[in-house]
Image (tube, rainbow, N blue to C red):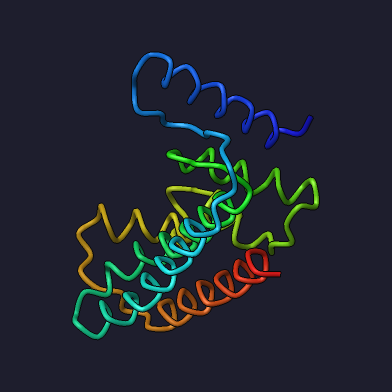
Length: 168
């Protein structure tokens, strides 16, 4: 088993235990595939993509980085729903996407996984780094407008690939 599939198993067991204890789960639950839920997540991803430009034009470009993260994350949740999973944990969602890719169930560019998975406090070049820098820091705007353009393109590319996974 790969590290991703081991993590998926751990996430499934975690959720199972939490549900047995009457808690809201914070892992993965296997259920019936749900294309309506998948469509709703891709709609949310597109909504977040639109918000990147909206925030930038409105003088809140620091929030553009957070919605870029969530645009891609909702793509992952859409894929999870298609394959019959409910996730309430970002690490579990990423592990699921990696596992689906490793088993050739999906064809998704690794860059989308990398930008949500890799985090280094000193490197704000990935989506997580940007989200945390602009959300938790005191910087009020993204001065380098090229960063916003790159984030928009990254989200567009992820949405396009996710749509192919969902509807082909």
